Image (cartoon, rainbow, N blue to C red):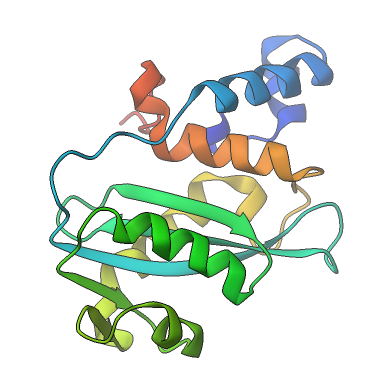
Amino acid sequence: MVCESMGARGIARVLGISRQTASNRIMLLGKDIKAPEHTVDRVSLEVDELWTYVGRKDNEYWIAYGIDRNTRSVVDFIVGKRTKVTLKKLIDRLMTLNPKVIRTDKLTLYKQLIPEKLHRCGANCINRIERKNLTIRTHVKRLSRRTICFSRSLEMLESCLRIYFWGNSLGINTRKAG
């Protein structure tokens, strides 16, 4: 239900359980889900970031993530402030996958973090991940720009993202029916 644009209160109401039970279950599921192991080198990755907030709008956070350009699956993500330190953690983890090219937008921090021979930047380079941003905002209500649903804690936000990105590894159906 997290992937169907429902918040914890909505999930609790539909299932007839307390809001705290729904929140605890989301957190528990999120902790059990780990990033999938990647044994094959990724040929091409796209990296972008999404804005959100935790608690209140002046407490901004950014979700930076990378997708495999061919399969459009999320390879890794990180939630944090929009700083060089946060992006460096993500880029370092992506570099362990031995990509042939990493495509980004024109954010200047990427030029400092990604080796020049691997880096491609520009609006045309990240079409797939920009489409994924729109899909994520549609499916995960707490990331919608104008909504009353938001994350009260960073752990809840990360749990919801893990369920959305990699829930299939536990047999959780994250695809919309129909």
